[in-house]
Amino acid sequence: MEVKRISASDTYCLRGQILRPGRDLSSCKFEGDNDELTFHLGAFIDNKLVSVASFYFDQNSDLNQGHQYRLRGMATLEEFRRKGLSKSLLKTAFPIIIQNQCQLVWCNARVSAQGFYESIGFEKFGESFDISQTGPHQLMFKKIP
Image (tube, rainbow, N blue to C red; front, side, top):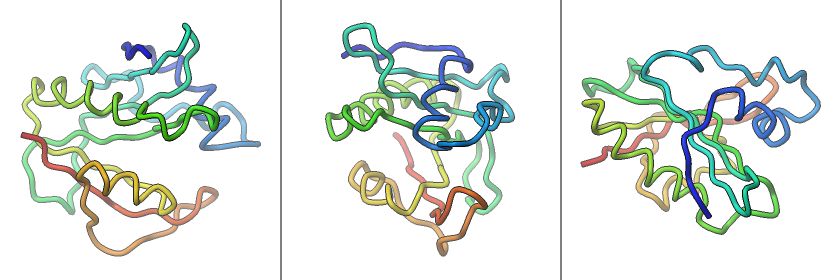
């Protein structure tokens, strides 16, 4: 397994397949995908992109922490789940985030993935909420040293 920086457009297929099945691929293009401080990571197995995550310099006003990064669009092909790929993406991202003067990462985690985020040190904030067409989510955050 190898983690590499990838382009925003490299994430669209996996985002669509895993996070937005049956929806138009244009729904997988997120605001901020091409901003200067945004970066995207991909996990490759045998040169095949099997997991992606995107990181945006984005402030959540509910969290009282200076500069923040938002994790969004994390997706892993079903047959490659529970193999540590998402953890590897985050482990690669944290030093980049710290280098950009941030020590907090947040996400709107699907409630079904909440256990994963808790297992790597993310904490819940507030009550769960519903995002139209994607279901129940939970604001979660992690302070990184």
